[in-house]
Amino acid sequence: MAGSSVTDRVAERLGFITRVQSFSACHRLHSLHLSDEENKRVYGKCNNPNGHGHNYKVEVTVRGKIDAHTGMVMNLTDLKACIEEAIMIPLDHKNLDKDVPYFAEVVSTTENVAVYIWDHMVKLLPPSLLYEIKIHETDKNIVIYRGE
Image (cartoon, rainbow, N blue to C red; front, side, top):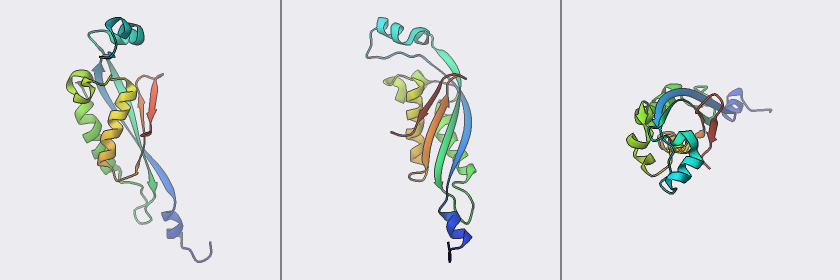
């Protein structure tokens, strides 16, 4: 483009940043809206009355313009602090059903954990920056939530 500077073009570019964080927690898949028999049928061994645990891996992705002056979409130190507040403090080494009030009436599926994390991260980040929450419950089970 004639007449535009490199700085102007860079300011228009979008970038994605993903920060990966792991946390450990236990839970029991059990819906208050289902009978005990239905819960056992729907959730199987994950409905064990004593619960079970996971080492979750969460990927938090933000999307935004690459700042022409800093070269960043967001400072990773700030993103790390948001993850600490929204994920690590409330969820790490917790019984999700007993220690996190949100899950008292919401089944602690990985889908709902992703929604919980989204709802808490979006309050801490600048508007429209959060793009995706991806949770690896196991190596084979992965949930993606984009706020929809």
